[in-house]
Image (cartoon, rainbow, N blue to C red; front, top):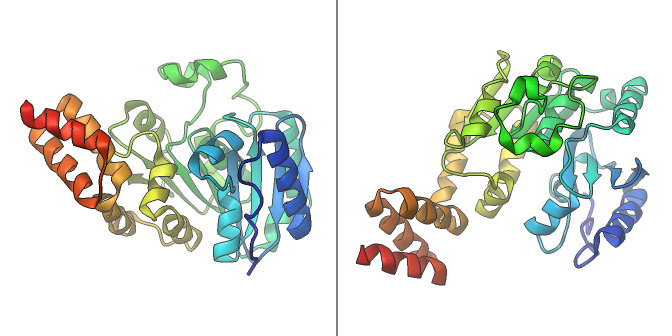
Length: 303
């Protein structure tokens, strides 16, 4: 198993961080820049391959060590990892990335692995579904993915206006169609989040399962990781053993998650019922001091 793969990334700005990732990937596989603000790191570590789509801004917010999720899983699970890295949020709709995946297909890259899992969240979840077509028979786990930003298809989603200039009608375009060759796929979404649920409804193939992450909101991967269940969830998907029962078992961890319960307090304090908001606040404070929640509980009791 690879050790210390995630050392040396903390506190770096984006340019130095990409250089550090480049050096580490070259030691253990390869790094290939794909132009400004985009690169690919491959870690050769085992017969199972995880393909992730990540960006520096989200990685830096998620963990102080600034380690890509793919690198963490390569170390802990002994998987090979192909990580497509961007500087910031992007729909991964670039010709240079198309050509890279074309080359992987021509080289039979994915055929060298026993199991292949594509993973990403939101725009990266879109990319995980869209580019999975390059690896027939693979598995896909996408957290709150968009299906497309083409206004003729998802014009109702006002969040996607900044993406309208990107083309979603050419190659690797409409994510639900690109999933046709996958062996299994899971779309995990909070059904309370309207736009996320509407996108999830567009993934209709029989081999696609929807997983409910009720009341998790928009910070899905971060909150799942804080609960300690993101990695087991991805591992179950890699083995093809992720289903609603397994997800429900893992999701029980939310009852002891400060991040989840704090979100519940804020949401219930705003929209009710107030009694549930008080119980959620008391549950957070039972786990430890939290000034924000303590103030919210005091106000709820006054009301």
